[in-house]
Image (cartoon, rainbow, N blue to C red):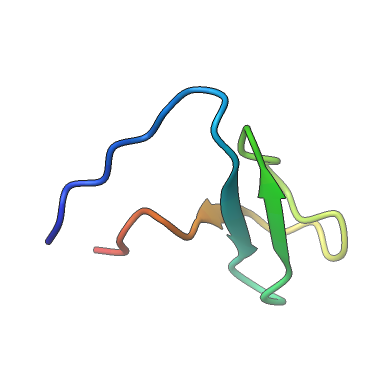
Length: 47
């Protein structure tokens, strides 16, 4: 697994676990605006 350095204020893509909606934002939007499910930072590996 590779180490990922995050920089505060840097935009990252976030993906919805349920519908796959992708949002580029500086901070985690928390919930998907389309379906309300949790979102994840796509730059962070899934374990």
